[in-house]
Amino acid sequence: MVQRTIKLNMPMNEEIIETIEQYNTISNLHIQKCFELRTNSKKKLHNALYRQVRNDFPNFPSALIQCARDNATEMLKGNRYRKKTLKKPLSTIHFDLRTSKVFLGSGEVQLTLVGGRRKFRVAVPNYFQKYINWKVKVVQVGINRKHYKVHVVVENGEIAPSKNRKVLGIDLGLKNFAVCSDGTIIKASKIRGIKRKYAHLRRCLQQKGTRSAKRKLKKISGRERRFMADFNHCLSKKIVNKDSGVFALEELKNIRKGRKGKRFNRMRSNWAYFQFRQFLSYKAEALGKEIILVDPRFTSQRCSKCGFIASSNRNKGFFHCKSCGFSENADLNASVNISQLGQALVEQAVVNQPNVAIDEGAFVAPNKIV
Ligand SMILES: [Zn+2]
Image (tube, rainbow, N blue to C red; front, side, top):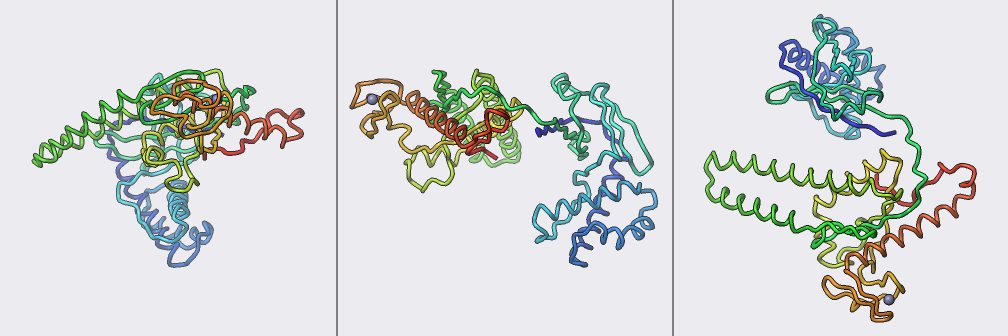
């Protein structure tokens, strides 16, 4: 099951504000009741509150009371019923399928509000047209600075797993942002340049400390974030569409600290790599492709030709095997090692799955990013 959130904007309207405020007040009543009665049963909450809410909010649609109640219990489920977090008056609210309807093709949104069912027109960018046939799960309405933001969560049915079992190894690093085992090298110099530029700007503005400087600071932090997200979207799209059904990456968790040195620890804490992995993972999922994680030990010291492991094999950016004399770009050699480890995991999984010949779709990844 693959889900996507479609973000749309709708013009401002008094009735929606009133609905949002009442909805959040009602949600909060349910949250408080939850703690008072020490229960998370929807039925008990309904019995305890429904009549009172009907009386206090006579215009509020009864179907929406259920949404507000479900929203409250979902929030509590999120923190395992430990913390009593209340909703703010203008927090985002959720509509279910009974209280909302979205036609992505024509851009029509129907919502049940305090005054009854209302229709709105929203502009749906062409980019989202590909989700027209997906099933709408939930509609979220919140307030942006200038508009209402309407988030439509859509879901696609099961996606057939790709039959392509070719593994592409991807090595992420500081000098080269990503190197694929097919020889693709994406240099990190452009990112480093941009990061340096923003770091410099930030330093100057922080020293200044005026109000306009603070405003500017906020602006550039958004710009830097968008640059990185765009970079990662483009890169992950390019890689995911390559002729491989399996993408192997180094496992970053569960490795003892300092195992792989400074480079590795820096990468582990850098969100740009984290974001890339996330984007690649969800884009792969939508195509029925998968991500597998391999043990990162020795991937940079091992010769991808003969398997000889020595730390002296690698000298900065170059790899030269002390045993067979094979030379290669060090990151490329590492990515080939990663793809070989991935290939081994794929074959192992096929062996462990004896009825794979009957049901080719039953393949389960040994290590999948969640
Ligand atoms: Zn060798």
